[in-house]
Image (cartoon, rainbow, N blue to C red):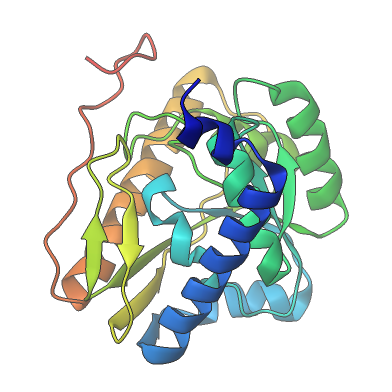
Length: 240
């Protein structure tokens, strides 16, 4: 094992890295000019104490804590993979509670935790293309949580004018200070508890397209190039 990998496995080093990342996010937030589009959508749910499922793409997770201004606790589903745990430690600096698991690995335990939270009128955050893609293509997991819980899915996209886009599978966005930034909310998407397989696929596609739309709107507002999704998921659940 290389020296760099041994260092990254150190809890102390990872805690420091997450603390520094949180400080960096706060600096970006403080030095940027923010515009919220259709913010009345989540505001209505926060005000009435109604639960919903927050959906956002994995590549935009860095600045997502900025969109959560309702004074409520958000419980974010985070992969048990090492990278996921680094994200989990970082977002806890913003009062975000994490749920370990994904819609595949560790799914049953994570699902029970999410349903318990939503039943108690809480809020759950999910990256429908996480933890490993394909990029900007929604898995069926988020639609399933919506169907079982009865809580709607509300998509959000965050864009910044000054950024670096990594060459990772999710085209991870690192926001830079002194940006023009936008938080774009989409309309709530509800999934019937009695939805058929065909209706579930339609709901998955609706969630996916809505997330693409709010992300494109955020990027256009900030004058940035559009990040294209990976090829669509085929009926057998694979990307061609």
